[in-house]
Image 1 (spheres, rainbow, N blue to C red):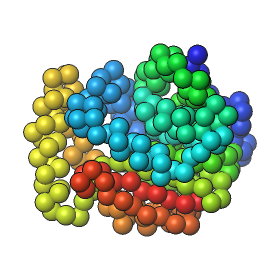
Image 2 (cartoon, rainbow, N blue to C red; image 1 turned 30 degrees about the vertical axis):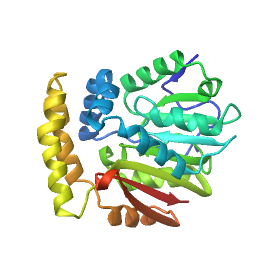
Image 3 (tube, one colour; image 1 turned 135 degrees about the vertical axis):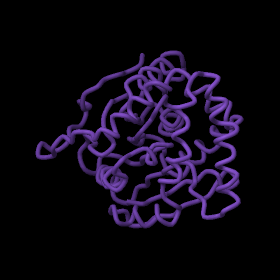
Image 4 (cartoon, rainbow, N blue to C red; image 1 turned 180 degrees about the horizontal axis):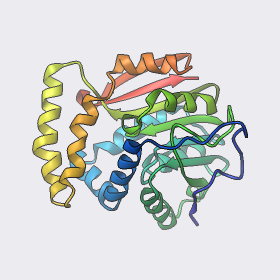
Length: 256
């Protein structure tokens, strides 16, 4: 049975002194966008990546270092792909906290959980909230992931600081997202794909305007080197960015 809740988890509360942040208007707009695309999000991911996103997500989870019995966190979990993969890693003796600001995405994730029979999937708890204000105590988690989420967070440094705070010393955060390439050819191909493949396909679902934001969000994102630098500024001791998917995707691995 799926666990879907919209309050801080009962198993571990954050410090009382931490204040609740009010999301900025642009954060609310992004939240509304992801609520709108939630019903077709998984189908579009499969179609647009020809299924390759599943490989990239498995790589990202492996880089997190999650293992049997761990308590792990998936921030910006969306419809749950990384959370399910993490669950397989930590097993029935572990725990996965899946966190997102989109109630509709969480409802779809919980529905997917109910449809799956593997015992380990019962260890996933779905929680709605803001990535820049995680409702968890310091040093709570053995690993963390965030897939296609950091790019859409308004205050990326604050989000990284929060994920660093809730990780145990020596553990890892794995950040999967589109790669903002410094190679002009790769960037040009990426732009062409968005304009001529992604947006036209999304228009077939009535979501052309929702997916037009993608090109700008990548341009406003950070290069691999900039992500490494920001992770170190946020408190991580080590950070390494890897280009994958022929340079169109990237994965940052940061050690607490």
